[in-house]
Image (tube, rainbow, N blue to C red; front, side):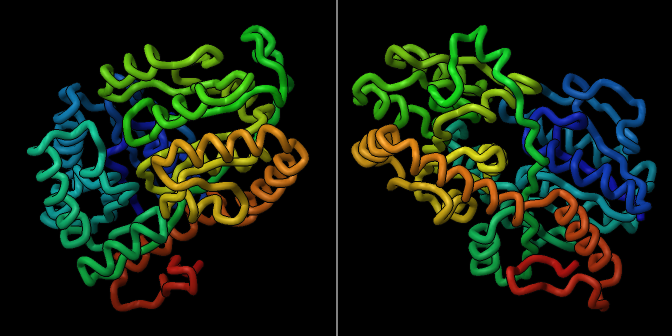
Length: 379
């Protein structure tokens, strides 16, 4: 079959949306399918093939409100003119309003929901209303809707009384690295705490900074991540950070691998998530994790990590202090986290399950993509 991915930044990936596109896309190519990926020109300017996938770079209006929708609209127009695909796979709630259009050319559509975008703090009233309407479209317009978490699946099915497929994220086999780049930053293995994620309010870094300030002689706290249309928030957390916090900006490649290989503890204090790829990656490296108790974090970490009530700075401070006093328990938690993630979250399985969804969409009366006991498409 021929599959077109729309809505993500493009490949190679700069974020979680595009990570799913890349890791699913090249595996689908290996399974004998043709894959076309639309990319935003400033992220993915090359039109040459990448890992067997065809790339089509297109412009977008680079602003907080119009970037994704203008890019997705141009991508949809390009696809409608060519009529090339069997499946148009849209990433995100915002572009889902366009999912009805490929039907005009006989192309089946799939919408992939990573999170409830209207909950994000960066949106104003009008943008939130648009995204709430887009949520309706994401379930009612396409031929299939896919989510990355059980919680999102349950929410959407309960609210809209439609079948929603659950296909989670995957993780790569971890590339453990010797601490060469850490040395240049003055960091020692197992002697720093790690936060890795976008610097936006819903990720809850400000709660972590307040808790960290209360600790007595804590190890360094490494903050790896950049803003996303959130300059005011970035300035706020940087200005309010206590001594001992090291802001590295967005990290990739060897530095990211070194940070994940040698952290004492990974902390995710978020108020909202889909299914966090950063959290899964941290666990795959054998890191103990301390997470807020929102359903999506608990789905990923559960009994394989430590949790605190979301936004509860007192409890977060207490859990941090307790874990810093008990390195033996932290190492044991890390081993359990690694075993759990590597046995449950596989990109190979993600590709197989997405293929099953596509086949079900193309053969709606068939039983190719029966739903298994976890709500995931049967392989």
